[in-house]
Length: 81
Image 1 (tube, rainbow, N blue to C red):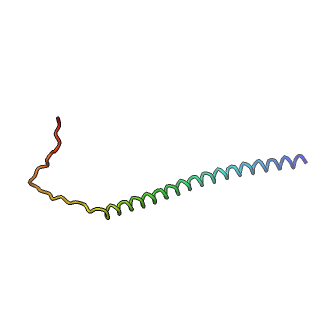
Image 2 (image 1 turned 180 degrees about the vertical axis):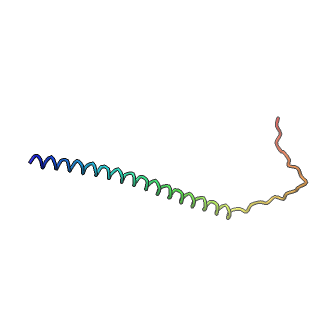
Image 3 (image 1 turned 60 degrees about the vertical axis):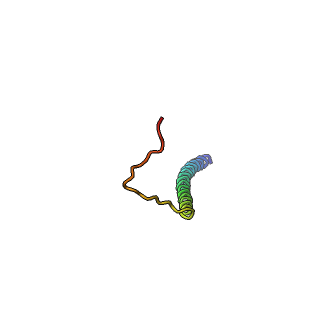
């Protein structure tokens, strides 16, 4: 009877180690999957926000186009004391 008990204990110990290894593998898989999914969602949200902001800028106010005069030199309005 002690032989079968020892064998059962060894089997349970091996099974316990196997379960721990499997849990570690699953943990690493879920971590990588969560990181990848989070990065993807963050990229999509950022793209949508930037796109929405750019569309608002286009609708709000047209750009002012200044005439370019080749004969004029650029003027400096500030003076250094």
